Length: 193
Image (cartoon, rainbow, N blue to C red; front, side, top):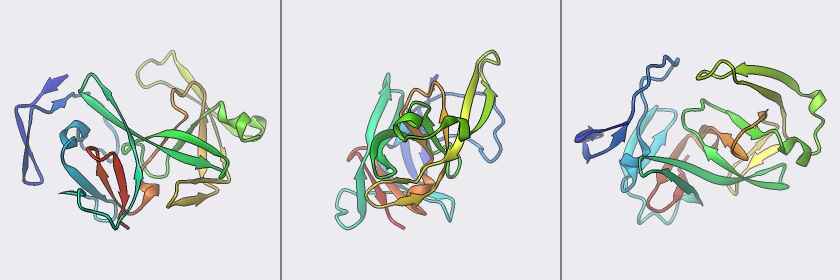
C-alpha cells in the first residue's frame, strides 16, 4: 500500500490518495481508480462514451437517485453497496463492483433455497482461486425471475450462485443505467440515462 503526494484527474488535483499495485494482466483493464479519491468529489460514469467526469450533485433534485452504503477498510479503501430485490420478493444487500464486467451477478449460494430453486438443475462450474490454486469454488449458473431496484428491473438475468460468497450478492454497475452518477458524500447513486 502506498500513498501519492498529488495526482491530477480530469483537471482536478487530489492529494494523499492511497493506492496499491498488483502485477496482474486483465483483458480490457489498464488500471484502477481509487474511490477514496472521490470522498468529496461527485462523478459521472458514461458507459457509452467510456468516460468519467467530475460534477457536483449537491443541488440535484431532479435525477432519479437511490441510497448507497459505504464500507471503509482502515480509511484506505471504500466499497459501495445497495439494496436490490430478487424476484420482487427478497430484499438483499449487494456489493456494487465496477470492475466485475458487464451484467455480472453473483449471489450467495444460500439464496437458492430462499428462491425455491432446485440446485441440481443449475449448471455447475468449478474455478481455482487466482491467488491460491488449492482453493476451488463452485459456481451454479442459472436464471432468476428478476433483479430490480426502485428504478430498474432486469427480467430473467443470468446469475451465478457462489459457494462461500461473503456477501449476499455482488453485481456490476452497468445494469443501473447507461450513465450513472455517484456521490460518496451524499451516499447516493444517480441514474442519468
